[in-house]
Length: 215
Image (cartoon, rainbow, N blue to C red; front, side):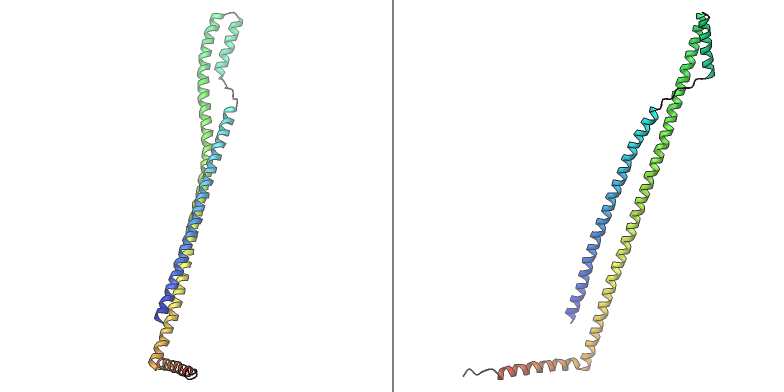
């Protein structure tokens, strides 16, 4: 009986270890597949963002915006034109030099402001895309944490199931041992063995007496 009970306990242990190994294999595969899919999603979004940024930059640079000159510059150009019509070329030349210098300064200022405006718009565009990427990464992390939580819960159920089976087997084996001990103490077990031995002897004698004589 003792050997059989040990074999039963070992059988439960082996079954549990096999189930535990299968559990880890399945969950490791599931989590690896999740990480691979998550990386693919992030890379796909980054590539899409890069393409969208190039399109947006081309759109910004493609807009033909003419500079708006100041009233002072426009007035100087009118004065220059009027002086030229009056054939006051010397004075018209002086005004032209002054107008050219003012126009160059205003153009430089306008280009700087336009460049700054483009950078700000591009920065806002990048910020929106970055927030989109961050949101995706948060969803991925949330899914990752949910997977870990689910794996832990499944493991707890697996271990609890093992403990229940183990406890049930121990209870059955303890009950079997108690019954055996009672039988031994009451002599029932010895009587059972004697009756069994007597039955075996009777069968042996019967076969012997019924066997044909060889003489």
